[in-house]
Image (cartoon, rainbow, N blue to C red):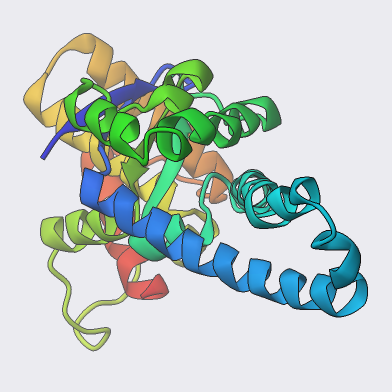
Length: 248
């Protein structure tokens, strides 16, 4: 299992598990199934309306059989990742997503670079270049990732496993949530809390304690908690427990 540490814009370092080559391959395969369905739909409409014109010359035929699916692929990758926060349908199915290495949110230009460089990574090399780079680079980056300063991480299954592995809660019957307002937070927030707890346990120094203090202060404000907790690590663990019980 390969991991990467990314420092967020709040100067908090989070450790993510990098998506494996097989995860990215299957996500890519699922995306191509969807693209194929879109192409067949459009091809049916085009051939029934202007089919005689399309097949009138080799240039038009090349556009129909090569450039049209290529254009659909680039457009699909760009739009799906922009609208779904770095997850095409294939990536969402495999529980992976695109993130920037500097901790910022990926922008439209980042997603555009990733989509366009598929023509080099996958089309012209039949995916060989992308596979080699993802397998051998330290941050699992293909050319599109290198140009956009992005990579692909696991988010779906690894996050759920980590949370339930830390605080094994089986049923609602034997646990009463202490902070029901925790439902306002997201799974990414929970992963951030878990990471800070883990790093505080491994590195008991002033810097990590200050991060814990700041995090607890922010959370008590967000959740409208009047009395600041004395046991701050215990408070954070309770939030994770409550979140699991209330959201699963």
